[in-house]
Image 1 (cartoon, rainbow, N blue to C red):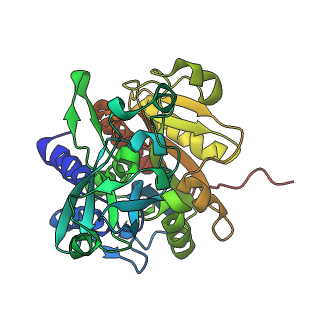
Image 2 (cartoon, helix red, strand yellow):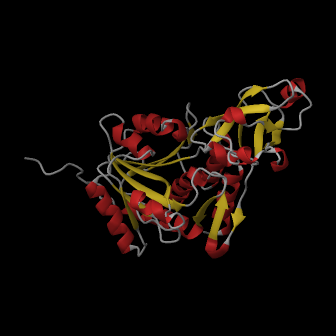
Image 3 (cartoon, one colour):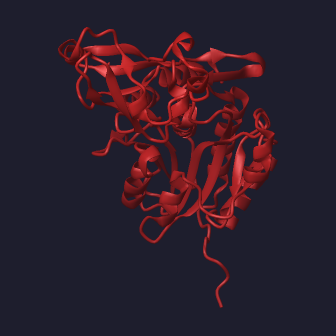
Length: 358
């Protein structure tokens, strides 16, 4: 990645984009594409960012990465000014103890902490259950004097995320909150920017979608509207190099070994063949991940919208998913962009997706 591309990714993950509140991230990506003269830009009524190249081509291809991240919402404020949250997406409650949080307040960011009980005040039995199991067991402290003071800063329904930023690590690896899946939104954004101005064999529709974490919402609505013949979804997947016992559950996937292609009844065999061939021709290492059923990504939404698209899943290996310290390789991100661009350019304009007929 060059400095401009890396700056975009850093700026994107620095912005809070909890599910349902993705606009700031979409606006940043839209500004980047507008500066590159990518045409047909819009943010639709649901909040999805969309762009399109070569719209008059009869073969429609949709590339999608969701821009929302897991987060929280203020649900209750007690008389002493402590906040109690509800989850936005799949938050693992024990992980939030003693974490910092940033809330989208009435007049800007409001910072706080998930407070914890000092070990000095715990009995031996208490110490066996330090981590909270439910949101009602842990309060957020924003320094408020009381409920009235807290309500000057936030309100019921204010969204929030953990306050954990970009951390450069060895071997071009980085950790940050919310790579799932703003990195996928970044990949499809960068792919359409690189392909803009090139002669394409297909109509290429790019979508950075909303609310994937609570039901693939933006994937369904945009796929219904675009009605693609082909859907290429970019998301993250479980790297199992750190937790080796998980290899027997989701396969042997490693950070730094390249993008991952999904192998499943969900994914179209002929389309997968085009992607695999593009990886081979471009000398891009490609990992394979098998699943016996559909996975919880917007590939599923594109597969089931209207009469269904032929879909493929490309994923960036990610350690520690749905935590404040998600870790990936920037080399894997770059190779995923390269592969997505190569695969799109390799799709024949007269591709017949139908099986052999009787």
